[in-house]
Length: 477
Image 1 (cartoon, rainbow, N blue to C red):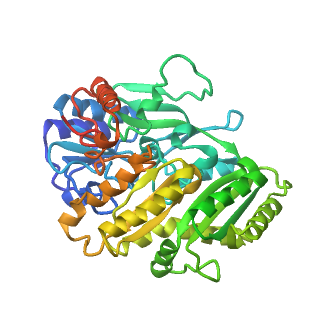
Image 2 (image 1 turned 135 degrees about the horizontal axis):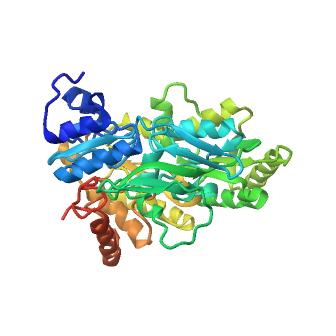
């Protein structure tokens, strides 16, 4: 418990805004909010502040603006790039949205759900299901990540292939600006052609332009039938060939299409209790795919079975299994979602969240393996991800580099090698995890000067004092 309760004009103003119990200053109580979940980034803060309404967020931000104190918005703190961790130096507060966790409205005619930013993603999914609808955003951290953070990072997840990124799922946004004003944009309009689409400035901005406090999100008809399949393939080219076969048979009903290397599966089998190999013989690569249909009599399962049979006959697939029950489907997806956690047990991971046109990924994977093996003999590559939408998590362990070695953590040589291959193919060095502080120094090398100038101009226009989440996305001047 916070028993010290230091008194300063700012802390007094914050307590007046949100209540003394929601301004936390004791070091032990603040500690979880001052580090990222990977343990790579650690910061400091004057306080952890927990507002309960948009008005309270506005009062907190306005008070900090008057004092020149930085505001670091934080959702579930599940990000991969340190975007919600305060800087180690300087004066800042961490602004937690956890208390703002209400579902405000569900509209089954317009197919929308209006929520506060602190709503946990799984809760939104459950609320949609209760009214026979689907909110399709789905990712490994959905039981703890918050929708405000998903919006701030433009989270992707497994269903982008069919439904798009978080950016595509938002109709309206409420945002507290850096001076404390509120942009009240909780409109459930599917058409609004009245100038700039201001909400898109804040989606993917990682809290550097304002604090997202609420959103109107799209809902979709709930699927009546879902088919999950796990297939063995020789290489990523064959995986793409399988995607083509599935699309020929099932069209847009392919909602997720994931690539998993054998090494990834072995990591899960070694470190995640209760996991098992879905197939008998080992294969270099696997595909995990999910298909949905709103018509229970559509014959979707038969279409998938036939597509897999055709792929086996054509030499594209060597073995496959289709989940017979929901429990089996969940077990297959647990393999995919457990790869990041399993990797943590192996040691220091150099993580790369890259995207390319899907057709370019096999060549990138081949060349990446050769380049990294030549530079770092014995390197182990953890390659998996959303092959269908062109997003791979291309991570690796380098022999001799350990998590307790600051020099190894700070090294950028592996990142530079991977990003050079991506940049050569005109890809992106951040597909869905954002920039945070992990890639802030690298971004100017992979964005054009015009793009960087425009981003800096937007930042100066909305946050001239640089108090919103400093040191993230754009380097401080």
